[in-house]
Amino acid sequence: MTTDSSPCSPQPGTVWFVGAGPGAPDLITVRGSRLLAEADAILYTGSLVAETVLQWALPDCEIADSKSMDHEQVVAWLIERARRHRTVVRLQTGDPTLYGVLAELAQPLDAAGIPIGIVPGVSSAMASAAAAGECLTLPEVTQTVIFTRLADRTQMPERESLVELARHGCTLCIFLSIDRIEGVVEQLLAAGWSTAAPVTVVYKATWPDERILRAPLSDIAALCRASGIERQAMILVGPALGARRWGELRPSKLYDHSFPRRFRPARDGVNR
Ligand code: SAH
Image 1 (cartoon, protein in one colour):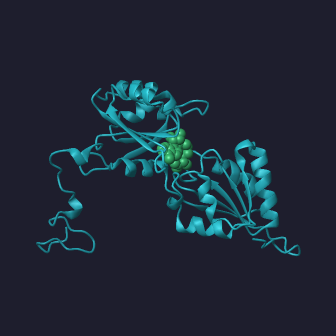
Image 2 (image 1 turned 90 degrees about the horizontal axis):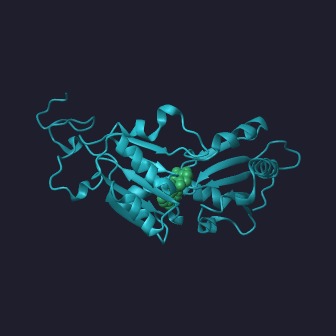
């Protein structure tokens, strides 16, 4: 599309940070796909975003892969295109607010007076839970989910070490750590988790080569190594995993007739 901003108008275009979703092209949002179809220029992360997502782009849209660019080059590319075009898209894997560099890219764009917009995406955490058929929360079992990772070159704040977070005993979605699965296991054990605690690892959720591994905490590292899974995988742990296979579940209070909700009085007519 050649909707270049008019040379008379100093008004720059908008840079949209769009979540591409976890991999399957039809898991981008309607808003995200609409922006791709309107975009004059798209910069995507080649290593992570399935190129099929680009099926939405117009034939004359300028498309570039940022995998060989450094941070300054990415910033310069976006600023330069926003000065010439109305709609520029930075396409990112999953949801753009998680484990990306959104703030680092937004700062120089803000400084250059270029408006930005953010379109959420289906995070790989949600896609992994869905692929594995798991619930991350379960009434009276766990009502809290922590998204976290192990430290590497990216240092973690001390209060967020995995061992500290794991002491809560709630669901953990562990990103960016499958290559150090032994370290994950060690920290969960140190936090008091049992060797029998169920762990689910989802490799490339929603991709054609998706794989799901399930094992107790004591065996999961060996299983991942034996399966050659060392990247692009989500580690899910938590007390609700496997609940579909449990004998009896307490019904959620949401569907309990004695539990009134805002638009549905309790059967005894009392709204407590
Ligand atoms: N913003 C992304 C996360 C990027 S960090 C999101 O919201 O999903 C990259 C990490 O995300 C990977 O190391 C892996 O832990 C996880 N990941 C990304 N895509 C995945 C997928 N399709 N299946 C499983 N995990 C995935």
